[in-house]
Image (cartoon, rainbow, N blue to C red; front, top):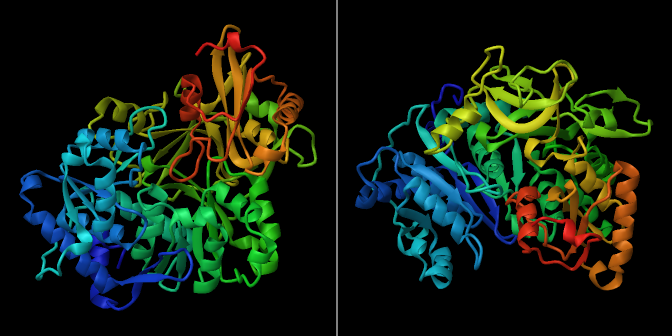
Length: 583
């Protein structure tokens, strides 16, 4: 049925008609046992309530595909609102709930960029926002609809959208400038959902467990819409609860018989480093069939550590998968599949810095371990292209990842020049149009895609390329007092040219017990040994000091900007030549 459907709207109508009492979503409000649930019938009814009030609202009537802001904490109310927008034929614009001194600037930009005058939220969230932002122009400019207080509607008709109709705007994190609204169509959603289901063989017997933010592409497309598309129950948690106690994610798999889920790389490290042996007692992870690591690049050591720790609890190596994607391609670009396992290889680190992909023994010195991120769908195209010349790269030559296919979004909202540059790229051989991902990698049709880093994050010192994630890994391994997945390496312009800066969080216990000079000495020694580099500045930060996206990825560009502006919450700074840094 879903293969013939034109939109997720049609899918929900079908499920509400044929399996109305089946549980669609289960939300653990406290991250543990406090359950809130929605059946397909309840989901349909509440989406109809939202659609009915939107259609009646005069403030946004009369325009094609009016945009509506969705401001919700993690939970079921967001799902009702999102689907209600689609039922009404409106364009949903999900955002995170702004906090005091954080988020106003981004929302103001989004409102102006998308021409939004109406926002949906809950009564409780509206009350919180009113206390914090009542005097701010952006808050006053919106007409607020409190969806959890809406009455049950009279019978509401639903107009089925065409596949090329705009469904929602996914605003990027904006770490290098103002956020851009990625235009995702109903056809994009259906194509990517089909890709995910095919790769992981999801069906109505599957049970997913997801804590990723619902306003984020991975949390929305895979955490919320994939269960609806494939017809299985999703167990949802708040990211706040999982960050507080990562074992909650694993316990949900154990308690509810979870078979499917995924997260960025850092979550797998958290499950090793922040879950004690006592907390692991009683876990049963034998029901998990597909657990994916979605990061660029994926750390081979994170996967092997997770496998080693959770093997006694029933987790099987064949259940661990990898993926690669981005919002501009709706979500997934490549995925491993049940019949194509992720491959780990060792490559020569020096050759990689020179843009060449040379496999060597895992026991060899100077090797870098890489894990493939899967393969594209059969109806998509993947190319590796020289980002400067547009020339298709030769075999084993690192280049920019370009992709084309039905999952590629329409472009950026009201940014035709940027859309033409990023979404309509052609190789010098005349092949295209392609989406330029901004990521570097190598693709082997047999072994899969290997992502090596981001173009904009590449550090070039004295003509040599250095991948920041490799330096960051070296740094966090240099001393026991450093927080994993909480550092950034980036270049800064000096009188001597481009030089390296390191910022790194300390563990909370290390703030009081470690001598910062000793920690910096360990960092400098390890960087010199492994990379032949001498940073011009090392900044130690307290926990939470490194800027990250809502999905937990380090924002290197934002960290660099904060460093230049002197806006980091510095605990200790080592800087041998402070006058040489041009801020």
